[in-house]
Length: 127
Image 1 (cartoon, rainbow, N blue to C red):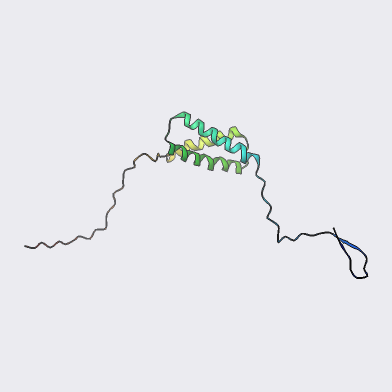
Image 2 (cartoon, rainbow, N blue to C red):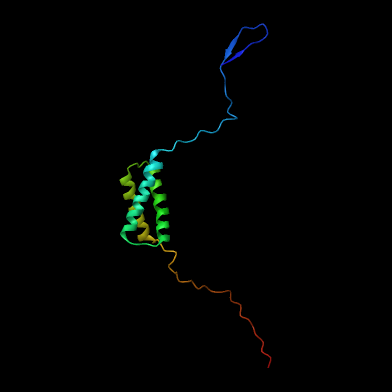
């Protein structure tokens, strides 16, 4: 509290009020499930995925992206059980492999041959 003295006035106590101008916005509190449970579920699911069949490093990195996106999506929907996060992540990874596959960066995809802009060149021969 600040004591204010005016000319020939009694002492008046006024509470201090901080202005919102210099204050930082409130930070959201990150829950332990986002800091501990979800990352552990991602690592465990990825470890199990690697044990099933040896895979290329680029496939593992893509699988990690897919797992991370899916598991954090499950956390956003309220799932907190690590075992369910692992199972859901592996099931999603299996579905992704079945539907569109996870390709290795080292696999050579056949090049598509498209039509080139065709305007026949007329070549004059000097005879």
